[in-house]
Amino acid sequence: MKQPFKINYTKFGFLPYQVAWLQDNSQIKIYEKSRRIGMTYAQAFEDVIDAAIFGKYNVWFSSNNITNAREYIDYCKKYATALNAVVKSETQTELLDEADANTFVITFSNGRKITALSSSPNQLHGKGGKIVLDEFARRDNELEVWEAASPAALVWGYPIRIISTHRGKQSVFYSFIKRLERGELTWKHYRTTFIDAVRQGLADKALRKKCTTEEQDAYIDKIRKSVGDTYIWNQQFMCEPQDENETFITWPVLENAGRAELLPFEKLVECRELYGGLDVGRKTNFSFLWINEKVTSSLHITRYLYAIQGEAFTRQNDEIGDILFRLPNLRRLCIDSTGMGIGLTDFLQERFGTSRVEGVNFTATVKEIMAFRLKKCLEDQSCLIPAEREIYDDFQLIRQDITASGNIRLSAGTKNESHADRFWAAALALEAAAESPYVAPAVHVAQLNDKRTARLDKLFVGWSRDYK
Image (cartoon, rainbow, N blue to C red; front, side, top):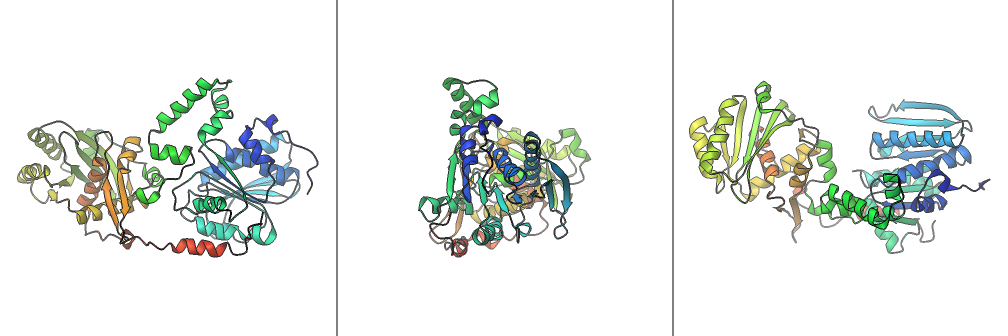
């Protein structure tokens, strides 16, 4: 449908990189972007124009979580008001096929709708209209979502918009970018880093003034320092995907599990069951005590953290012994009894008994079992940790390297005088609460042949090099 008038995008405050995206009417567009540069905000404007003003088609928006879906709909409502588009009705509907899946729907007077969905691929099957896949890489079901969404473009010629930050080099989103670079796809490809966005006016909007180059540099430096971790800065802000195979526990997993509320020590006596883990160190690495409350048989919540650094082991004996004495509900404490921890373990076992104080010999096999147990508990959120950047950084010191034979070998880096001490203390606390031995899943043996890639190749049969 021919547009009846030309839109002045700058009138609505869009920055040059947003305007370039909005002016492009290509059927399939993909955006490789930094976090928080306003691309979902711009996409909502395009969708309101297409559905409410030009009446081209219904829009189906799918994001990685319900919060993003609701935010997108709020943007659409704002633009509909600004453009004097008549909203006939607005509804929130619970889908019958998935009890926890909500949709947010805006219906315009011309009959067209904008619907924001959850990330479930089932909700995209059979949908006719424009498809918008927001934060596409930040899902665990990218391939299924693409299988559900792509026929709309391939068969019926509807537009598709793919917008995302990176999430490693194993994602389908990264595969799309590489196919574009090799010329296998002719979709329109956009890429904006955080620095690109700042140079094009993002700092002006954030600081509400016209910034000099020096002020832009200061703003970039401030954000860079607040992010802290180079891995996150490169991937989330500079559009440089990092190898997820190197990270044992991904950042989204840590964020989802970061909901624990720590308690003052005097409140710990009110907890039902406590279990602790102690990773032992003295000078180079500190001793770290991690205490979980076992709330139910399947939920462990971090309640107390205690670090000891630079103190003689006799002093550490006294401090840990005092904690055990004052917390009778601390049912079991597991200690790294390798090397320096042997003496501390013997002392505490002599005082409190071997059933309450257990020494754990950190062999490679034992560490692997404990690490995979902690990873699984974080992934299914049966172990909640504090939402603290220091803890996230420490947990991400654990790396997994794939050997030539396809096995995964765990290793730990060092940062801020920690050698993943918090990670191992947390793993020991889960070991203390364990009622039966944990069997590490078969996932610890890597498959060197990527079946997902072959499946994705099949999906692109029918997408010619000239398909736009």
